[in-house]
Image 1 (cartoon, rainbow, N blue to C red):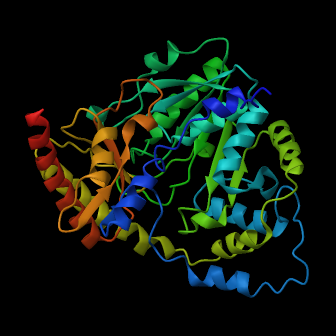
Image 2 (image 1 turned 180 degrees about the vertical axis):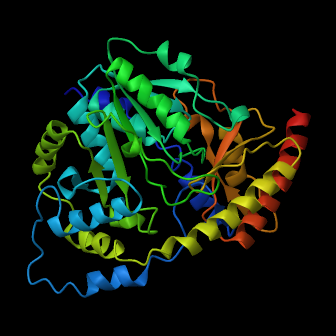
Length: 402
């Protein structure tokens, strides 16, 4: 009897570079080692109690489906939130999704045919690879460099990659994994490219509220590109509510929105209780983000200072989100990050980071880079940097013996 086969799509679906070292971290913990998790963007900031209470107070007799586009009351509140941050949209231009991930996937399925190409500045959020695989879309990377702090690549670099199959440019602003904050001028540059070549501009703005150098300029604030721009959003990072799985697909393109609604209808509705939570979040006071943003800024400043003080390490200062990319004096970040969990400890502690190659589509790039998420308190960041500094010294000695 012949063995059942797995689909080509399933076989080629990439592993998460953020999660694939988890078994090694679990084994380290089982040995009694404390692991500082700088590998994943799971904030330790308390989820606002008032939005959790809103769910407790919902008192629904029946937990019903919502409208496939999401509750109208929530979409209206969300439109008001966008208007407060100077993004002019109507609630009818918003579709609620099951996390930002579904917003991205719906956009891919609605805008691209199998074999179409999307250009993404790399390094980029690793799961874009997974969504592209699911949709049969080819990711075409345009490299940015740690030496420029991961600024937008020059127009010429985009132009030489555009073919008849190119359908979109995708950005994350502020960026995951680099923390880079695209300026208004860079956004205008992207606008010029998408208008010239009749492309979509997908803008993932999950970290909008966390900008430390300069201000956030949304793709939906660009003028004259209403048909081209798609905003993909989520409450996960904004309100430290990663488990709620509520996102949004926002566009002024009516035909696109109607198309995405068909995909939304096929999965019936986004989660009901989480929409209650998301709606309550829009009522948080306007100064809610001030304290959270300052806390992340403190963490960033400590992390970047400590990294750049370690011999052979370089880390550009990220303008937003809560990630930093660092270049390490190692040949393989993959091997080093695994070694940290398998064979190293400092005072019974070690650190877990995400190897950067998983954030690149171009083979060979990012081999000596890691992404660090500054989602731990300052004291723990200091301790994790003590571990990293000691580890790099020990690793250098080990490698000099081979």
